[in-house]
Image 1 (tube, rainbow, N blue to C red):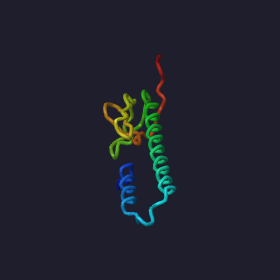
Image 2: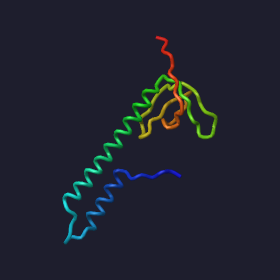
Image 3: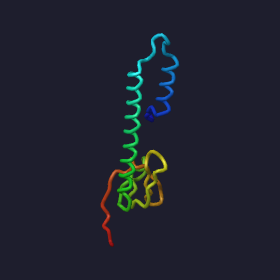
Length: 114
């Protein structure tokens, strides 16, 4: 079962709903609103940091030999030929096929013959 998380759009919808349905005689205090915005900002910064760390990890695998967990099929062993950051989850190209970073199970340093 896929995990569902709240994103930026979900947070903004909740915030707009909260603001439009609040009691006009007893509105939300500015400090509560600012606190929620700070929490949202921290959440976005954390998400961005995790994405950057994942991208750095994927980039560090470039040229290295990795073992890929291929969802029920036999595991794949090969050299990371390229890295893609087109989505939130970086992907690595191994033996001509793209795999998500979380499918990488092992990494072996490849000798540099320079």
